[in-house]
Each structure stands twice: as structure tokens, then as C-alpha cells.
Image 1: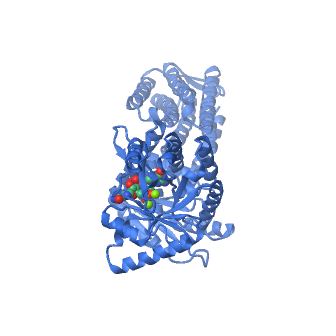
Image 2: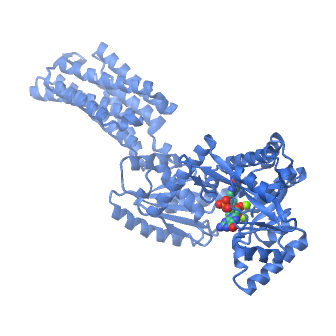
Length: 630
Ligand code: C2E
Ligand code: MG
Ligand code: MG
């Protein structure tokens, strides 16, 4: 009998099933389909062999058994090609989500199966050559070719939506299937279809579906890429799930070998929670996802595990290492509407957790917060693209000279409806999403341009103060970029005062110092902003080459709280003056505050008492009136 090909195919399929089921799988749709494809193909080969036997022993077995076995084999052949088609289409989002398309494909299979079962079939048996033929067989091959060619066409038309590896593997699989069917149609005596499919599945396994491809090499847990695929699927299927993000301290003070050992130990520990899938998030972060199809069960299990994990992290790893970790607990994954929103929540809240805060439960408010942030981010991007960023100027009064000698440049966004968005709202978002450099540069360009275009120097403005965000100061290219802008706008660096605040780490403080030295040599001056808020304080003045200190509004207000505050403020002012720096008092709103600041010896006043920040044209009018310039 000519079943040796099928026997080889069967062995190959059984081996694949063995290797595939040996590893934990993520539960991705493509994995599920691949498993079904393996099973269907195996059944198909078994039925193929049975049908050959039933034809050979046609004399002894009842007629309906031979017909039944052959037709079942043909039906399974059609099903195998259908599964291959679904596997391919699943890669293409618009096909995956198109319900009509799904329905049509199922109808085609249904009609095909009906014809295969209804139409007549005949058998040929001569010596070693055994096969079936007739309308039923022709229909089965037609359905098979249609789905296989369909898969091939999908990879051709939609190739751009698939990565090259997937595209090529699926194409090889389909090409093998078509070749096998063509051979079998031309030479009916060689039954190679089952074997061809098995080889195709083998290629697919090696290239795409080996469970290894979903794992992170270093830790053996599911990788970040797999996390994304898995979460995409959870959201598209609307599944309920809970999650625990374990975010370890970024700065592990260990050598690489120890780090690898600790990573493995943490992975193995977290992996022991059977009810959850463990993924490696970025760097040293992990994510446990509980997806038991029952929300309550997910939540109970995850809450319990969270307590255990927290306790474990109080103990040593690798014998003597403590690993500081923060935990984000998300009992309901639906606080986010997509995987990227979910991962962004993890990223943002990890940074937001305070020094002493070990864990935080994130609920719907975290989701809406992120969505608002994203809206602001989109507004910033649109404002940058459509040139809707404005700079307003708040005049700064010199007590000694009794006139306005400078102004602070303050950024605003004009939204698409013409309303102003204030920096308190968009600057932190810009910092978070890496857009602050673009905003800062644009504000600086506008400010420099305005200074020269309006000949502000002649109107009594000696310099303009421009805010620098911490993130900008940490960019080593800052001084070069700002130098070029001043050059292009033909503004003397001495007309620019840059406001800085305290930088977070020593490393970044050094970059800031480099920037300050370069720009300082050119002639720019610097101010320490937000003094008295905790963002900036006295010992910072000692280290930083600033010429100006800006008292925050809160400090000006605190002065009036009690006598102690007054004494502290007096001492602070005298110390700063002794170092030789000038002081600006911000947020001065009343005559009483102005007089008090003047008595204290503050040099400059900025605040609503004199003026709110003004649009350029109003600022020019203000100067004309107040600085008595023509
Ligand atoms: P800041 O640099 O401390 O600026 C002073 C803020 O206090 C301004 O708020 C100003 O309008 C407000 N202010 C001034 N006088 C008074 C007063 O008498 N009463 C009250 N209630 N407020 C007063 P604004 O314009 O909303 O800016 C807020 C913060 O946004 C700024 O604080 C600064 O840190 C940041 N910012 C503004 N523009 C930029 C920019 O271009 N780049 C960067 N990185 N940050 C900016
Ligand atoms: Mg400022
Ligand atoms: Mg300030």
C-alpha cells in the first residue's frame, strides 16, 4: 500500500504535537490556531491511511465504511486548508475584525463540506496503487486549493501588515501545500498531501510557533513583545483580567553576573504563581496577568499574591541582596482601553510613586488621568505643527531704577477653539512625553525674535527671562542649540537670562553645569527659579553659577504668616545678597507685599500688582506707558 508518505507525515505531526505541548503557551490566537492545525492535520493523515485501508479491503468491509472513511478524509482535508487560511488572515487586523468576511469564509467551508459529503466518489485499486476519485474528491481539492491560494493571496496583498519572517514562513507553507496537491492531482497514486502539510507545519513551528519565540532569553519568562501581543488580544476579545506590575529599582548596584542571577531568581519566584502569566516588562520590570475568565477569581488571587510578593521582596535575593521594588496593582484591566494605554499607566505611575510608597492600587481614575494626559499631548503636538504656541511676557520691575527692566517669557498654547492652555497643564505632560525640548526651543525662538524685532532694549528691557525645564538642562546639546538660535535671531546672549530649577541627580547636574558654563561664557545670565518651594533651596545657590534668585509666590505669601517667617526671610535675603546675587520676588499682588519686599531689600518685583503676563502687543503698549518710552 502507498501509505509510507502518510506514515512519515504522521510521525512528523506527532513529534510536533509533543514538542509544542511540552512548553507553557501564552494563549495567543495564533498559537491556538496552530494547535488546531496540528490536530486537524494529524486527523487528516490518520483518516487518509484508514481510507486507503478501507479501499484495499473494500471486499470485506461494508461499502458505507469505505465511502465514509474516504469522505471524512476529504472533509478533514478541506478543514485543514480552512484552518491554514484562518491562521493567515488572523495576522491582518482588518480581516480579523471583519465579521462579514469571517461569515463568508465559514459559508464557503460549509457548502464545500456539504458537496464533499453529498457528491459521488469512486475508488481505484490496482496492485500498490490506491486512491479515490470522482466529484466529491474534485470538490475537496477545489476547496483545498481555494483556501490555500487564498492564504497566499492574503500574504501578497497585505504583506505590508506582516513582518517579513511571518510572511515568508506562511508563503513557504502554502507553496508546499499547493505543490503537494498539484502532485497528487497529476499523479493520483502518490498520496503526498498529508506529508506536504506536515512539512509545512514543521516550517511554521520552527520559524514562528516554537514556544521559545515567545520567551525572554535571559529569564525564560514571556518576553515584552509577547506581552504586547497578549494584551492586544485581551483587549480585542474584551477579556477580564487583573494585573500586578513589579517595578524594581532601575539602578541595580550589582555586577552583571549577579544581576543575571537575581533576575533569574525573581523570575522564578514570580513564575511560581500558577494562576498568572508572567511577562518581562521593560528592563527590570515584570508584569503578572491574571486572566481566569472570572473577574472575581482574578481579583482574589492577585490580591493574595501581591501581599506574598511584597513580603518576599523584604527578604534577600542571591543570598545577600535586597532589591527595592514598587508594586502597581490593577484589579481591573479595563481601566485602560488598549494595551498601550495600560502599559503607559504602568510607566507613568511607577515614576509617580513617592520615595516611601511601596505600592498603589490603580483604579478608573488612573485610566482617565492617562487619557487626559494623552489629550494634552495631542494638543501639544498639534500646537507645534500648526504654530499655535504663544509667548506671553510678564514685566519685572526694578525697585532701584523704578522702571521695568525685564520680563519673564511664559509659554501658552492656543487650542483649536482659540482658548489658552496654561503651562501648568501642558509643561509636565510635555516633560513626560519627551516634547519639552521642542517646546523650549520654540519658546526661545519666539522670545529672541520678539526681543530684536520690537527693539525691546530701546524700550528699557535689558534682558528677557526664559524658563528651562530640568529635562532640557539635562540635554548636553542644549547650549549649542540655544547659541544657534541667538545667532540666527541676532540677539546678544547678554539679553537672555535663563531660569533653572534644581536638577535631580549629580550626573545631570554636571551636564547642567556644562551647559551653564558654555552659555555663561557667551554672555547669558542665569536665575534660580521657584526658590523656597523645595524645588530649589539655599545650598543649590552655593553650587550653581546663577546671578539671580527668584522667590516663589508661596514664599512671598508666607512672609506675612508670622514673625518667625519674617525673620527667616530676612536672614535668607541677607545671605543671598552677601553672596552678591540679586533677588526677584514673584507673585507680588498687593501694595503691602510690594512695600514689604522693598523693605527687605529685594531688587526686582514680578507679579499681578504690576501686571499679569501679557500678549506681545499688550506688553509693548504696557512698556510705552509705564517705561515712558516713545
Ligand atoms: P514660573 O516660572 O515660576 O512663572 C511664574 C508663574 O507665576 C507664571 O505662571 C505667572 O503667571 C505666575 N504669576 C506671576 N505673578 C503672579 C501673581 O501675582 N499671582 C499669581 N497667582 N500668579 C502669578 P504661568 O505663566 O502659569 O507659568 C507657570 C509655570 O509654568 C512657570 O512658573 C514655569 O515653571 C512654567 N513655564 C511657563 N512657561 C514655560 C516655558 O516656556 N518653559 C518651561 N520649561 N516652563 C515654563
Ligand atoms: Mg520662571
Ligand atoms: Mg517661579
